[in-house]
Image 1 (cartoon, rainbow, N blue to C red):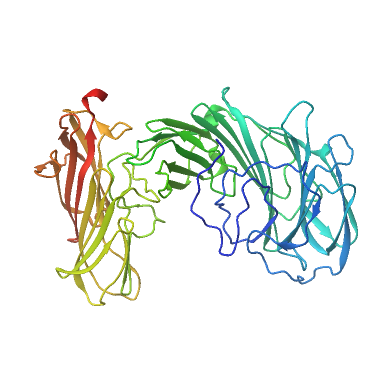
Image 2 (cartoon, rainbow, N blue to C red):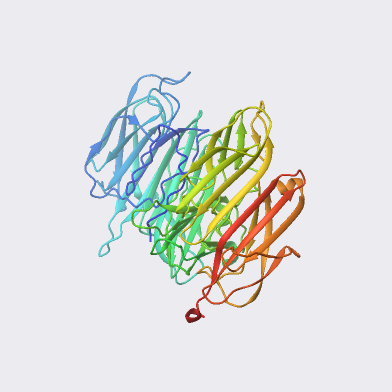
Length: 566
């Protein structure tokens, strides 16, 4: 269950992500750089059995303040002696220690020591460092290792220095979910230490619940240490994700958290039946701030999975990896940076009809149609699922975008991602009609917008609207046959601000051969579904308060259940 779904990459240009299955070396990055990690499901690593190595100073994951002496920094090179002691107080080779330079000529680099017997001696330039060490112990008769993570966020080297890394000072991390059927899977502990604009990143991952942690050395400057711990448990059709975030002058020494049921939030994920692809969806829920060893949950078609988690950790990211054809592109839905409250339950349903345009109304949502000078960039999510979730690679067999200028065909695109195109326009004001269409393995969607536009000194968002249809469907995307139903109708986009001048909806049960008007009353229309195996199609014609229009046609939007499946 610890195969995770990817997230859109936000790693800075020129940076590299840590390899899966390895403990992430210390990373130095500028304070302004993002902390959201693409890599999920980082596997546990212990120092035991690692080959002896002392790595020279080398660049690490992300951009950092360029190396070079800082004003006022002590000069010269000094001897740093490291002594590693296990839980029995005896010297041990089962360790991995990382020295991260936060100042001095090596700022922006790190050294790693692992498995070297005896006392380790390093020659290091004067300056500020962060030091962390993961010391491992194999319990007698058990396969899992015990892990002691020692973090010294402030190590000022201004002369020869000896540091004793003693596993006996560590204290247990005791985090437990309030359910009895949960089985521990993995835990990650992370720390960021910031000094004069440079941030060092250290972490420890473990597949054993026997993790202990300790702070070493003096306090740092106020608020310079950010620490978080994320622990994951598996359940039958579920995952528990308990994460805690701290900021202060010290790393953690032990951590005890036994949340009550009311302290947690619940996300229920319902998996639809995709029109293409077999197998289960892989779903992960993990904190947005900082990397985390996410635990993916397989959910079969028409199945349900449940996540219990700690809202206090901050915002959370949900990634739904839909089943795909063996040679097809990966298809995922991303719900990033969502906030939840303790005791709340949120339900997300993926991959069910009606598929159609969905326009995000959140304040930070990018425009779906933007004119910058003579360039029109179109990125309408033409095939969002029934809940409005937008897939990274929608299922389609054909797509077109056609632009008319003053009634004359002007530009045409075929085969690109549905609803996406970049077009060059003449600068003068003109009346435009923009049509985007997509054919799916079952059904098709067409949307046609009219508006006027001209080049301007600043980028201008085009006034596109969309109409959403929300029938009550089973997870396989079907409705009962010969049933009187009511289907929700909602308006999105420019018409929300400009107002709706008119909205006409029609329904077809013969794949668009004939259409019957369906008046919108109380935000819903009345639909009588056809015989078993039949289909329902929709058409909407909307004019907003400024005279811009949209016409949408959804052929075979959904089907009725066959008689045998009733």
